Amino acid sequence: MDIQALVTAQRAYFNTGATLPLSARKAALKGLREAIAVYEGRIGTALRSDLNKSSAESYMCEVGLTLSELSFVEKHLASWMRDRPHLTPLAHFPARSFTVQEPYGVTLVMSPWNYPFLLTMAPLIGAIAAGNCCIVKPSAYSPATSAVIREMLAHCFPPQFVSVVEGGRQENQALLDQKFDYILFTGGPAVGREVMAKAAVHLTPVTLELGGKSPCIVDATARLNLAAKRLVFGKLLNCGQTCVAPDYLLIHRRVKDRFLAYVMRWITAMYGQQPLDNRGYVRMVNQKHFQRVMGLIQPANVIFGGQGDPDTLKIQPTILDNVDPGDPVMQEEIFGPVLPVLTFDHIQEALDLVNARPRPLALYLFSQDKGVQELFLRQVPFGGGCINDTIIHLATSRMPFGGVGHSGMGSYHGKASFDTFSHQKSIVKKSTLVDLPIRYAPYTAAQEKLMRLFLR
Image (cartoon, rainbow, N blue to C red; front, side, top):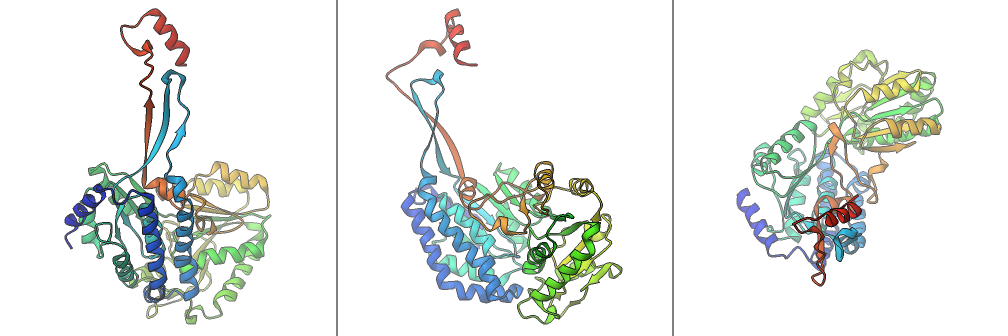
C-alpha cells in the first residue's frame, strides 16, 4: 500500500468539506453502526481466534461498549458541534465572542491487540464525530480482528475518508513518517515515546493512552468478600491483558490472610478448579508474551496457581505472596493473570509506595473510611479509577478516560473524544458601527486612565 498516496488522498477529500456537515457525520456513524451489526458474528470469531475470548466477554468488553459509545455520541453530537458563546470583556465592546469546534483534518489511530476491536472503534468514532478523515492502524498481534476491521470499514467508508493499514513495524514507521494533523496511540510507554518523537517532527499533537502498574489498595475497613470478588473480576478480565487491570495488591497486614482466602475462592467460583481447561478462559496473545509473564512468576512466592500451558498459551490465575517492591514482577506492567501481594501496617506506607512509582493509569481503593478515600483522591496522581470497585470507570461515555505522566496524556470517550479530535477556534466578531478610540496611538493620559480602568 502506498501510504503517502493514501494520506494525500485523505487530505484532498477533507479539503472538499465533505466531512464537515452534521448530516455527513451522523450518516457516517449510522453506517458504522449498521456495519457492526452485519459483522458482529465475524468480530466474535476473530476475537476467539486472536485471544480465545468467549462470546459473552467479546460482547461485554468490545462490541457492546462500542455500540454504547456510538449511541452516546450520536445522541449528543449536534449540541457538541454548536458554536459556544463566551462573555466579551467590556474593553472589546461592542462585540460577540464564541468558539468554533473545528476538525483537525487527517488523523491517525494506532490501536493495540488486547482489546483490538473496542480500542480501534472508540477513537475512530471520536475522529468521525469531530469531522476528520482517519487512517486506522490495528495491531499485527491480533491479525484475525485486524482483517475483520479492514473488511468492515472498507464496506462502509471510502478509503479517502476512513482506511485501514495493516502490518507490523515497517508499516508503523511508514505511517509515522507522514504528516498527520492528530495522532491517537494506545500501547506501551516505549512505543509511545517513539510515536511522540515522530510526531514532534511535524509538530503533530498526540494523545497517548499507555499503561503502567495500577495498584489496588485494600485497607482494614474494606468489605473483604465483595472487594475480593471485584478484584478478581478486574484482574482476570481478558486474563489480565487490560491496561487498567489491577497490577498489584497493597493490603493491610491484619486482613491479608482472610482477604486472600476470599480471592482464591472467587477465582475458583469464576473459572473453575482447572482454569486451563476452561474454554472461556482467555489466553496470552502469543508465545513471546506467554514466556514473559511466566518469567515473572517466582515459584518461592506462589501461593495459588503458578502453572502455564505453552501449547494453549494459557496461564493459571496466580497469586504471589511476600513480594518485595524491588522484585522483578514489580518492575514492569504484568499484563497477565499474576497478582503480586505487598502488605502495609499504616495507610501512609501504602500512599508513599504508590507515589514513589511512576504515575499509574488507574488506582483502585477498597475502604469504608472516607478519610482514607479523600487521602488517595487528593494526594495520589493517577489517570482514573474506582473506590470499592475495579475497571468500571472506563466503561462509560460520560467521563473522559486517559493517563497522566508515565501512563499517558490526553483523554477520550464520549465528549472527550469529540474534544480531543477538535480544535477550539476562538473568534471575536466585532461591530463595525462603533469604533472606540482608546486603543489607537498616540496615547494620551486620558486614554491610559481608561485602560487602567478596564484592564485590571
